[in-house]
Every structure is written in C-alpha cells, then in structure tokens.
Image 1 (tube, rainbow, N blue to C red):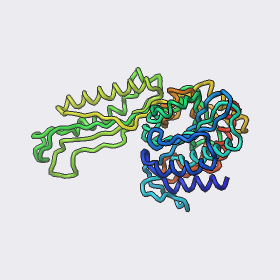
Image 2: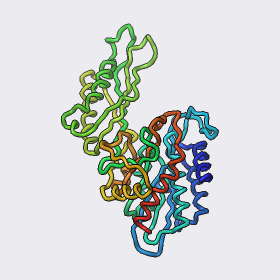
Image 3: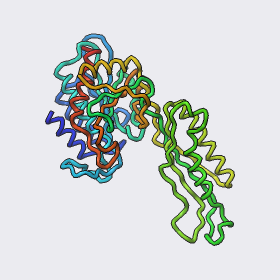
Image 4: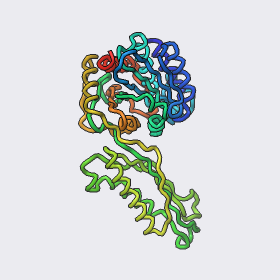
Length: 375
C-alpha cells in the first residue's frame, strides 16, 4: 500500500486540467506496464487509457472507470505533496480514484479472471462533461463491447468508507448557460440616448432562480444557480450597452433538463425583447443525468456487504453531476459513493484532500464485484 499512497501523492502534486492529462496518462501507463495487461489502449477520447485483463473462457466484459483530470482550483493546504501547478489541484479526489484503480489492477494482475474480461478505464476530461462522451464515441472503446460498468466517487459528509447507493437517478444532469445581452452604450449623463441591459439583466437573474417552481418541474428536483454576472464597464461616465449572465441549470432527469432549458431560453427571449436588446445564448459543461441499473446496484450491495462495509441507501439523487451518465446511457452500470468522512472539507474546496484509507476500501469493493462476475 505504501507504493499506492506514494502514487496518489505524486499525482496530487502534479495535477493536469481536463484535456491536458498527457503526463498523468503516461504515469499511469508506466504503473500498469509492470502489471502486464493483455491489452493497453491509449488515446481514448483524448488522453484516456484503458487496460484489459482477459481470460481464455467466455464471460462478461466488466468495465471499471476512474478519472484522470484535476480542477482549476488552487489548493490552500500545507501538504508536503501539495500541487506544483498554480491554479490546478486534485481537490476533487481523482488522484485517489486513480490510486484505487491502480491497487485494483495490482490485485487482478496477481489473479487473472477465470472467464470474461476486466477493463480498467482512466477517463479524461470528466470535470468539463466532455470526456465520457468522447470516450464512448471512440471506435477503440466501442470495440471493447463492455457489458457492465462500475465507478465510484468519494463523498464528504458521509461516514468514512460507507458505500452510498441509489437505484435509478444517482447524479443530476447539469448545463452551463451563458447569456449575452447587447444594447447601445451612451454617456452616463444621457442614458436615454442608449439602450441599457441593466434592468433586463436584474430581472433575468431573478427569473432564472424562480424557474424550478414551474408546475412541470415541481415533481422532480431542479435548480438554477446564477454563478456570474457582468454589466458594462467599470466607468462612471458610461451607461452600459452589454451584459452577461452565467447560470448552472441542474435537474434530476434528462427529460426535466429539456423542460428547464426551454423555460430558460423563453425567459431570456422575453426579457431581451421587452428591453429592445439583442441576445445570444451558448452552453458549456453539459452533463447527462447518471442513472444506476437496479441489477448492477444489487451487485454493488452484495460486494459492499462481502467487504464488511456500511451501506447507506440514498433517498434523493446527488446534486453534483458526473459524466459517468454518458457511459450508463449505453452500458448497464452503477456510480456509487464512498464516504470520505463527515467532518472534512467539501469536494472542490481549496482545503480538500482525498482520504487515503479509501484506496484499500474502494479496491476491495471493485474486487468483490469482479469476483461475482468473472471468477
């Protein structure tokens, strides 16, 4: 385990953002070279890399997935292995997920599957919502013909090592909405000579926050969070002529996201038209809802019980998004949680650090799942 902890800390010290994970992928490839996989598939959906451990007997192809990328947050801890890359850190815990997968790879290299195959996928660009889609649309990935898929995410706020499960909706869908309003700039002494987006912007911010109260959306969870707004220039002599509002739309299901998106676009059009403004809408960081297969959930439940772990059934889906949803759309699978501790900083906070006890716990759960399917 010391080697795996050292690997986790090395990865923590050298994070790379979504789409730029070349060195991380090379480091993982070097680790697995010593494990002698039957097949190594590089450049999957960008910087993704997968390792296949097979057998001579027919059986299921079981995919286990973790993430390569880091987040654009500067860590504020005093760890000896803190990030060497300013403005970039693994305060999401992806360093620990990779170390868990490496530990699992070591375990199956010592005991190869008796039937079928195990596929270990290190996926790029999870944080932007683009990585899983790029991977599943890659012909090299399609050729693997995976039958089942499993992944986990560490979750602060829950008992350390507890397994968190929910059949059906597990992670919310989300979309980043960027609205640009354009009017006419004028002198601040004569605002009537221009067309200011100030009132429309303020009404839009209020209106977006109220969209989840729509009767069509009330049966399921939905949320709109305004994350950024900008109006004109910081000059007291100018009446503004442009504005920008950014918001994150979040829903329990993909169907609800279609409704919320439609309502948000309709609101923008209404506010812009009434204020005689032109507008532009674009989208970023789009995540599908992540849904868990009931049968595969039962497999995780049995694996957790076999590993002697506490199991917590979630009543509601997690608000956080996960692009594993792009995989579970195509392959029956489960995204489960592992509690990271009830009193630790939250994910993406500058002080967060992955609890290294989860490396062994996560790999045991993976191994118990594999044991039930290919051993």
